[in-house]
Amino acid sequence: FHGDEFAWVDSAYPVTLQTIPVHKHPASLLQENILFDNVVANLHVCSEHCMGALKGCWQCLWGLHVNINSKQQHQAACRWIKIAIILDNLVIDVEGAIKGAHFSSIHTSVEEED
Picture 1 (cartoon, one colour):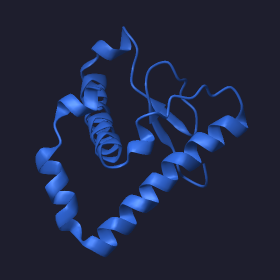
Picture 2 (picture 1 turned 90 degrees about the horizontal axis):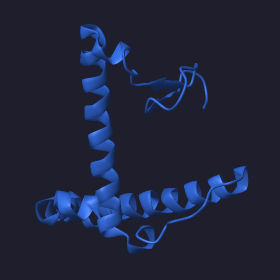
Picture 3 (picture 1 turned 180 degrees about the horizontal axis):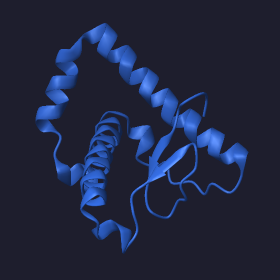
Picture 4 (picture 1 turned 180 degrees about the vertical axis):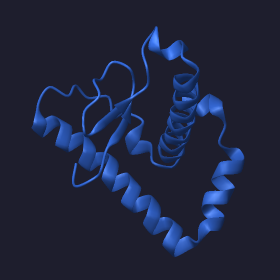
């Protein structure tokens, strides 16, 4: 991470300058934490929809089941995903946003769950 960058993470991660997790029980029962956790959950859903859309367009991501046990393996997986994102943006630039709109009308939550 650089500067003020951070990641929303699940409750398995600690709070750091770069990670903001949802709350664990019993803190998750406090009213102010419920609102926060719901907002983070909505961000998580948007992230999952984005990944589902990418996986629907780029078959190379379907089989990206890799063990990540080192920094090099993590970087390789990130490069693989970045390539799909770059290609997706190029397709949108070349073919227009209509292609993306067409995909969203046929993409369902069932594909995301797979």
